[in-house]
Image 1 (tube, rainbow, N blue to C red):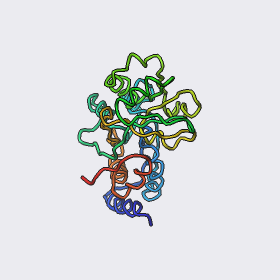
Image 2 (cartoon, rainbow, N blue to C red):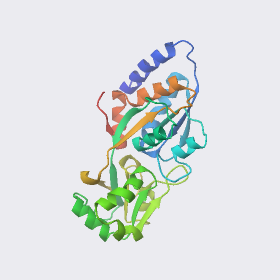
Image 3 (cartoon, rainbow, N blue to C red):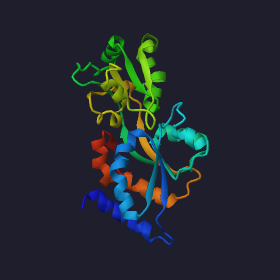
Image 4 (cartoon, rainbow, N blue to C red):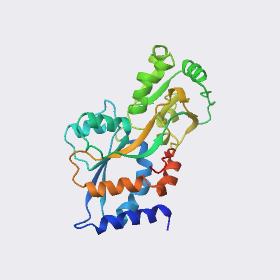
Length: 262
């Protein structure tokens, strides 16, 4: 039995032993960055518990009506959200999350891709990245946290926000859109930025690397309970499993960094 399944069964034995514990429909709202981990581990959770995960996708932040804060603000139901920490900060500010329910899951980084077979630009230092972006014919970034950060902070830190504004493109993400890497793979953008786990598994691209530390924002994917969560025990069990040390191999495979036990 894989170690993560052993961990899952241990967690769920405690849950199932609680008085009144029954299988439930668990409504999950999740952004793209952690989705591949959730997609791989979720079926084991369902099989072991009898719970059914009802999944709704959307970006952590941004102006999309599909964004998780927008969904919760207009009254859509969720028992648990999985998104980046900036998004959960926003939920906290709007009174949409249960205080103290936040659970860190993994650390993520903004990465860069080009179309497969194209020369890989130098992004090793801030000066090199600046020159690469000034020389690029077109640049794409996401409509969620990483793209919001780059367009409002990162490009300004590089001193090139005005210079490149005419050749940048914001890409609408899932569920109705697509990863930035898909746009780059079709040749519609020369260079693309997004969280690494949203880039590296898309066919037709070459992964260049992560942006330099000087413009790399600290990004944690976290889970939290909305204030009106109807299945808090099952939601917490899911987050405990996804944040366990035994899920680390799946997190690493996705392109994120597992967090040390805390």
